[in-house]
Image (tube, rainbow, N blue to C red; front, side):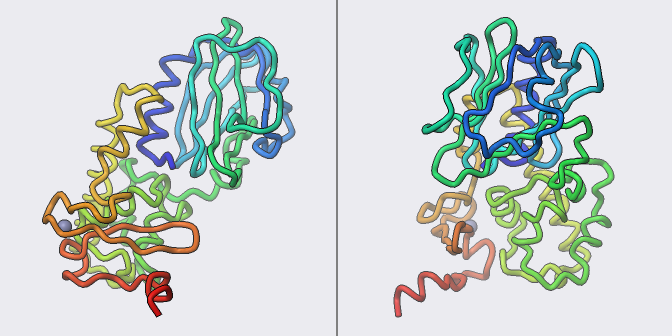
Length: 291
Ligand SMILES: [Zn+2]
């Protein structure tokens, strides 16, 4: 799933490609992806792209129609969504139905992009709005971790008194924007902290260290993906991850085997030596299988 660094890179890539182009048409191929109905997608016809932005994991394409207010075409790619730029788009609108295509935007010069979603769980979302803060998922976002205003004090206030596991806090979009399952694993590994630590139990020093690791991990990932085209981002993200998605492989820091804890619809990865004093965490699903 694209998280803050990948969405930032997509916004940068799209800025290079799309700004200045004029929209010919926007079409949904999977009706459930469009979460708004006013203004309609036809309001985009003739609008010129003036910029792109990122809020949390939301990608914002800013368009100026010939008349009327500025429009924001906002996308949340969810777990299995992706954006694919095409220099030559078919002229006919896509046929709704089977396949990964969810949404298509075509510019008047024939170029454009597809939003695709793999798998059967359709979570990709598209919004067209005059005010991005009207989107509930955007309005409820916590602070942006790469903003100067995200200080160790702000992180301390988020964690203070929160008797929940740090892993869940880091990936809660309402508490901190843009970090998901992958980068929360990476942050906790770099911070040498158990994903099950209670957020409220961190000392001021641990909070300061964790803050530095959050900012450093995200900045590093952004630097790695800087200048990459959308098509190369996924490969780069995977290559840059140290523990996430690497259960069974050797920890690049200490050589111990990266382990996994599975949940109903996700899994976390960690290194026992680096993060949990050498002790594997209980994996309820595994122990149930072993009984
Ligand atoms: Zn390790």
